[in-house]
Image (tube, rainbow, N blue to C red; front, side, top):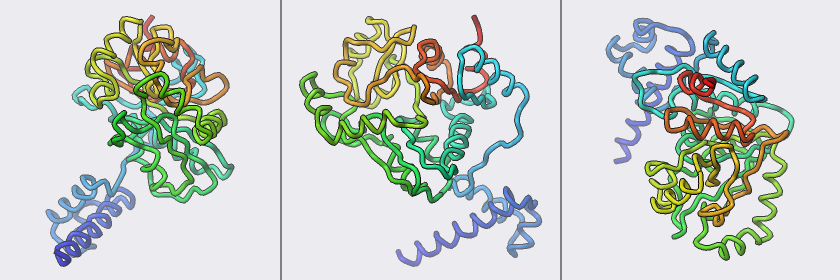
Length: 318
């Protein structure tokens, strides 16, 4: 078993070297084969392995004119402090392709700042995809703080917990929120959020310099329902109250107003309010995110946006 592990590690080392030669140094596969003393077919397999094992993370550095135009128009329409629009792949069914890389690039720019910053992080599939795109770094000057709890009411941890993953990658002090996303009762929520340790976390959230959050829907296929955070019946009740989307577990209506009834009465995370002077970057794309994004933008719940071309075009329609 140890020998097999050593062989796997050696192969990954070779894949990383081949991936670097191809994507960073700009070598052709024939050149890689010659430099590594292998066949062209073997070089091709190693480059493919580097991608499949996420040893190489590719970003598009060339600005696409149409994407820049859409980003500029969105900034004007919704008075945004930041906006980045990624190209759309019409054949893809992914809800994170392109935007995860774009959001990670902006996240990385914040991490590379020498001045200390407090960075708020949401949770969920989109933010997990963003975390997976971050390079290994050393950022002891920054603080990472969770905006939402990462457990279910039974105490089980969410697979999409993000803050610890980011902290492991960028080596920054982190402040997780050891709470359920939604408490079992209003009384339990009041008890949990009254704890001194939780209040100090909420105070830190108030001092964030930038926040990165996913923007979700509240339909039957919404992540909150899929992950067992709320039931289908609770999601339906939220929709009857006018909910069209959610951020960090907080449901809001079509005008971007945070609901005061339903499951929102039991959300245990940091309060969701208008971004104001804070930079809160919403990261989302796709048909199911259009209404939530429009509402979040109209209500000022986010002051920054990372999305794709197709979603951007929809958000610019009157």
